[in-house]
Length: 187
Image (cartoon, rainbow, N blue to C red; front, side):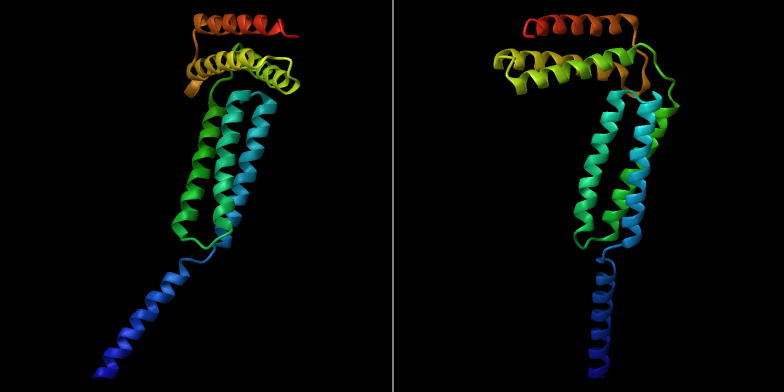
C-alpha cells in the first residue's frame, strides 16, 4: 500500500515537473513566426511611406512601436519563457499589423503631409544647430519646446484618420512659419 501511494506521488510529481518543463522551453515556431511578422511589418511601413499611404509621422510612430516589440522579442529569445509570453508578443505584432492596415485604408490627405514634412525639417535644423553649437542652449530649448508643442497638436488633429479643419491646418502652418523665422536668425 505504501509503495502504491509513494509511486502515485512520484508519478504526479514527475508529471507536474515534466509538464512545467515542457511549457518553459523556447519555442522555435513562435520565434520564426515573430521574426516573419516583424519583417512583413517593416516592409509594409517602408512601402506605405514610399507610396504616400503613410505620412512620415505615422511611419515613425509604427516604427517606434515595432522597435519596442523587437526589444521584447530579443529578450524572450534569449531566455526560457512560457508559451503565454510568446503568444502575447505575437498578439502585439498582429495588432500593429492591423493598425497599419487600417492606416492604409484611410484616404490619403493632400495638405497635411506638408506640415508634417516641415515639422521633420525643423527638427533636423534644431538637431543640427545643437550639434554644431550654432544655437545657444536657451534658444535651442525654446525652439525644441515650441516644435514639440506644434507636433503634439498636429498629431492630435490627425489621429485616427480624422480630417483636420482648414483653420487647424492654417494655425499649425502659421506657428511653423513663426518658429522657422525665429530659427533663421541663427543661420
